Image 1 (cartoon, helix red, strand yellow):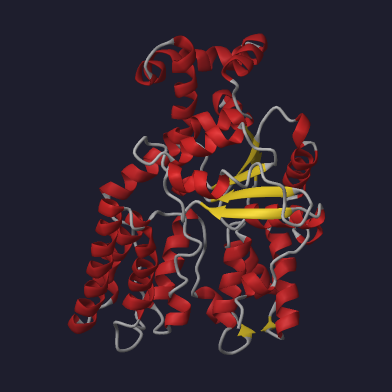
Image 2 (cartoon, one colour):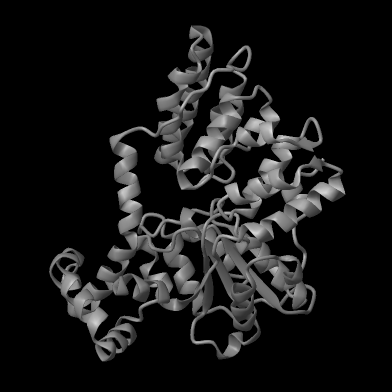
Length: 402
C-alpha cells in the first residue's frame, strides 16, 4: 500500500496549492532559461512546502525529461561530476527538453576534501539545461557563492485553508470519517507543512479509518519545536514500527539534535528498567553507525541509524506508557545550535561585505555591518547602491531593513 504522500502527489502545477507565485517564477525561469543571467534556480523554504513536487510538476507541464539527483546520495566532487557532468550537455534520450533537479543540497559539503557543492557551482556555467536546486536553509555560509549564481525562489509555509482542501480530498477518497472542526484543527497545527499534514492524517486514521478529536490531541500544537515533539510521540507512544519508522521524515533538526532529544527524554518516558536498557542499546548502536559515517563517509548507514532510533526504540518497550510526559530539548547544546541558525543570514551578508571591502568576515561583522545597516535604513540611494554592489537577495535586503 502506497503512503498517502505518494498516492496523492500532485502531477501538474494546477494540482499544487498555495505556491502560485513561486510556481510562476520557476516556470518563467525554465521557459526563458537561455536569456537568464542566473544559471540555476534555488528553491528554498521549510520542508513540506512543495519544492521538489513543483519541479516535477513543471517538467510534466512543459513536457521535459527530469533528471533528479538527491544530494544525500552524492557527497563529493567525483560523484557530482559523474552523475551531472554528462547530463548537463547531452540531449534527452526522448528527443525533448530536459530539466535537472539537485534535491536537498543541504547535504553537500563545500570543503575541499569532498567539494560536492563547489563541483555543482562549476557545472552551472556549463549546463545547456535549466538546473533546479532545493534547500531548506539557504543562509548557511557555505551557500554564499551559490546564491550569487542562482535565482532564489522562496516557498512559504502553505496556508491552513489550502491544507484543509488537500486533507478533505484525501478523506473523501479514502472513505475516512472526520469531523469538520477536527480536520481544520489538523490543518492549522501542521505549521504550513503539507507533507506533514498528510502524514499525520494517515497516522491518526490508519487503524479506525476515522479522524477524532482524541486522536488529534496526541499531535499537540506544531511549530518548529513541536515537530520534534510530534516525532517523539510517534516513537514513544506506539509499538507499531510502521508508524514510528517515519517519525523523523518531516523534522528539520539534524541527526545530532535527534540523538540529543532522544537521550534527554528516554529516561522520562521509559520507566521500566528493561525497556530503558533495550532502548538505549538501540540508541548506542545508532551512534556507532553515526561515527562510522563521520570517519569513512559511508552514508548508506543512515538507513540503519533511522531504523534504530525510530522503530528500534519504539519496539523496545513491552507496552505503551499511558502517562503524560512533557518532552523537552536538551539544554545548552541545542540552544547554541538554535542561535547559530538565527545568525546565518547575518553572516551571509557579512561574508559578501568582507569580500568587497577586502577585510575579514569577522571584522565586517563587528565593525562595518552595524554602521551600514543604520545607513541602509535611512538612505534610499545608499540602499539601492549597496544592494547592487553586494548583489543582495530580497531576503538579505529585508534583514538589513529590520
